[in-house]
Amino acid sequence: MIGPADDFLIHQTPDPVRFVGTSDRRFYDRHFLTGHSRDGSIFFLLGMGAYPNLGVIDAFASVATRVTQYTTRASRELGTDRLDTSAVGPFTLEVVEGLRRLRFRGEPRGQAVELDLEWQAVAAPVEEPPLFSRLLGRVVEQGTRLIQTGTWNGFLTVDGSRLEVGPDTWWGARDRSWGVRSMGMEREPAGLAQARRLGRDRPPLWIWSPMQFESRTVHFSLSEHADGRREIETVRQAPSLADGGEALELGAPEHELKFDPDTRELRGGSVSFRDVDGRRTTVALTPLHPGAYLRAGTGYGGPDPWRHGAYRGQNWVDSVSFDLTDPAVTIGIGPAHVLCRMEASTGEVGYGTFETQVYGDFPRYGLYS
Figure 1 (cartoon, rainbow, N blue to C red):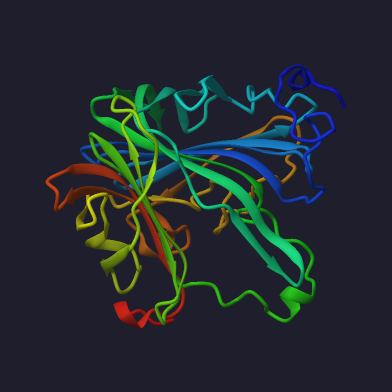
Figure 2 (cartoon, rainbow, N blue to C red):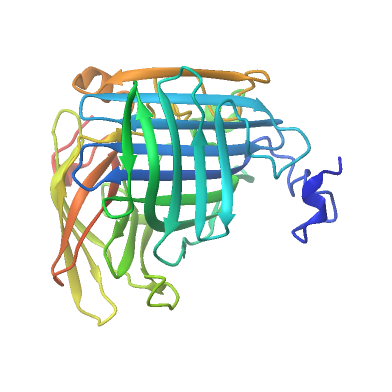
């Protein structure tokens, strides 16, 4: 299955580009992007993912106002051309300049969300530690993920209202990842691991936050068990592209958060880390927006039946909406990407998403299932 991508010097295996290095059905190659107005009025999530072993490519655009989250999503057959990321329903994703500029478009098709947005990187990319885990000898997760912050320019239309987007006040981050992962995909038939409920001892606290300041970005990522054990604790600094330089390891992450006891959504608090000078920097978190919810019809699970990689035919597209004023709705579509103003003890002021979720019991914050 030779395709146009085979003319580029990008092969990683002896096979054509169409064939990935594993036959695992869960192999994926995905862009995930966030964006927001710094006044906190709008938050949006964008994504496009290819699933070569399922023969599917899909995409979504989800925009949260303060009262409603609207999501348009689409899917088609992948075909042999891995470079073709256009006409996924109304959506097109163009890599204008690698690690610098992306353009995400959603043409008018009578759906809830339309847009034409260009993302411009402002900081160097941060590569997270490699993802890898096994269960009963099978690879559960294996992949690469990079985080990068930038600004947005263009327009978006949500539920008929058009918003002009400019780089001075519209910031955001992107999560670029690929590998093997089950997140958001349809469940496989039950096997021994599921029958014996293995792998259930996952850390109940999850934090993921690219904190975007004027001169640098600090990426804070942590997963923690109720007894304090951690499986992930990563803090890295990415300098602005204007200043040059590469990402640096910071480390020693700590948190002091406040949650709504009923919805478990972030209500404020702070995080801290060891900075480049060896001193501890504390960042106070002030939520500006009730949140954009990860499972609001975007394929990551929740009450909506659509999942990433699911076959929906050649030209599937539709839209859904969710009432963000109803806790009974939002509790089923979390975790929330909460837009925060971030004030550092160094005097820096930044903005960014603070994605967090607490599963089950976490006594430190008075949360019990």
